[in-house]
Image (cartoon, rainbow, N blue to C red):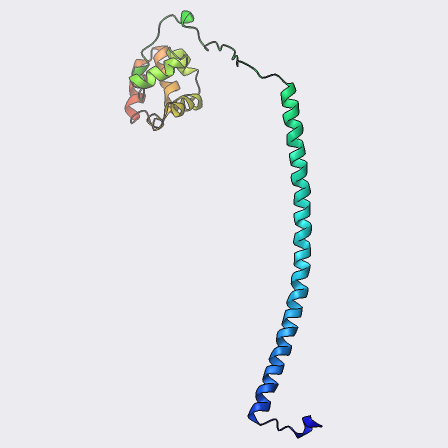
Length: 177
């Protein structure tokens, strides 16, 4: 009966109504958040347990690996097989002057010689891709050179077609077409 006698328009009653509604809303929000987070927490705890099991398996495997490694003796020295050069220097009759090929200078000739290419015939039979690989391995200083025409020039030099070689060299700019 007391509730019927209260004037809802009075200031103290209105404030108390607002406070009661806010408390009810806060409690409802807290309960909803609790329900939502409890499910998420349960999922995360299960994931943590799975990871703990995985970690225990990894540790067990590590212990087993170390035990097996103790049974295996350690190698005291690594022995590498000797690699024979592609072309033996005794097989070479006479090294040609590869600097006559447009684009090959003294340093590039030295690099190519280290790879076992000494004659025009060997250079003519070498693919431009292999020559590019040799230049690439030598460093950035040599990567700017384009060896696509070098085997053709070497073939002309091997056959003694010096006029045709000169015509081809005149068409080239620093060994490039």
